[in-house]
Length: 96
Image (cartoon, rainbow, N blue to C red):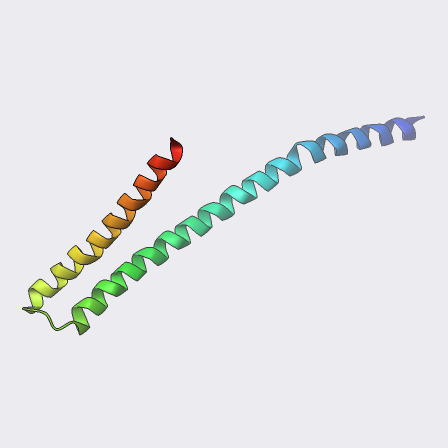
C-alpha cells in the first residue's frame, strides 16, 4: 500500500515538473542564448564600423590627414542613419 501511494506521488510530481519546470527552463535558455547572440552581433557591428572607418582613413587619398577621419565618420554615420531611417519607415508602413 505504501509503495503504491509513493509511486502515485512520484508520478504526480513528475507530471507537474514536466508541465512547469521544463517549460520555464526552456524559455530561460532561449532568453539567455538570445541575449548572448544579440551582444555578439552588436559587438561585431561595432567592430565592422570601426574597421571601415580605419580602412577609410588609411587607404583613401583625401585632403589633410585630420579631415580624412572626420569625413569617414560622417559618411559611415550617414549610411547607418539612412539605413535606420529606411527600416523605421518600413516598420511604420507595415503597422498600418
